[in-house]
Image 1 (tube, helix red, strand yellow):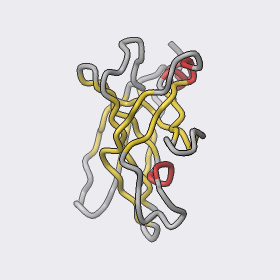
Image 2: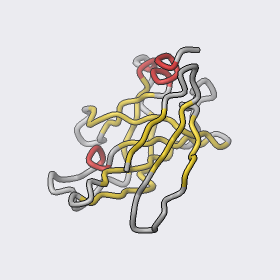
Image 3: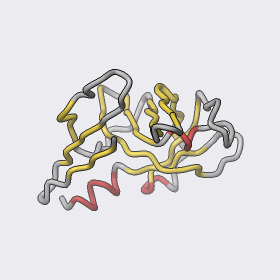
Length: 134
């Protein structure tokens, strides 16, 4: 399967419950049992433009899912620091349908310090694309 096809099947829109509009994109990166974990930006789940508070619950819709209702997701982790340019959130989806497949990736380096968010992911594809966000 091509890298673009893998990316497409793992991509979804994040929908804020009150507005029913997409506020951004998330990527399915891990499945454990029937629970899916999605990576997005903290500003996608922010309640206000100052990013001082964040939604606890959102909904997600995968591109291939226009005929299905949205899935409920819990905002389980949020890290935001404007000065350090940290803008990261993890969403958890329970009872994820089996047909969804995560973007194959693995953590290849741990943060050097607790106060530094450094993520290195290697994506499994024929071109071995490396995504770096620090």
